[in-house]
Length: 259
Image (cartoon, one colour):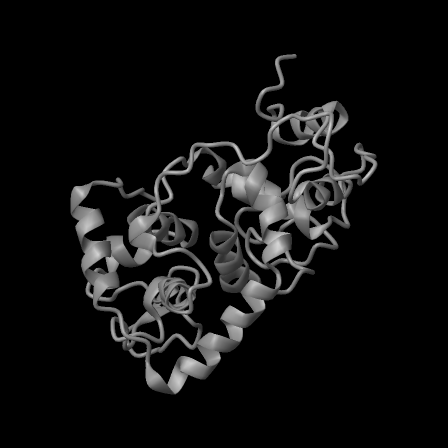
């Protein structure tokens, strides 16, 4: 499928829509229920996202959109972790054998979508990456319908959706809560910083330190231990062994590791 360039025209479109987004009152309780579940699993999303430089709530929203927040499914497309993915993208993760841990699969999915290469997590870029994760079919072929993957259960979506691969219906209505709808509710409830204040994320969260325990490192070590080739002592110290494990899984050492 063709791709869509992240440009100023697209940024303005996202900004204009998000600024005047209103959650449907009859769906607010459902939205809050999902937001509660996303926030509850914040530590798990952080453990996957921080080494990749991806905000935890972006992963949480994708997890809801693709898996209904079930930790027994691939983040790629909701296929079961008991095997490699069957639907597109097929045959993921390429490395390793099932059954996969959710963390192992989620890391592969996020890297497969190149989200680990994004260094701008401003509002418009978040919306762009969320829509890209689902695909550009709405914007390319049915531009009169705002993608329900983003805007369902808000004032920006009424009807029209893909009911199967390459099968379109003008009258079908998405029942899934949209990603932008969830994002706005997270912001409204102060679960995340105001998106207008978010700066590009370039600073590494974890830094090599062999002397003392640091926040969130135990979560990182537990996550790394889900990979068969890693066996770390969970002590919260971001030392050399932890840095080597990060290099093995993510391709780069912890910040300040000069090896």
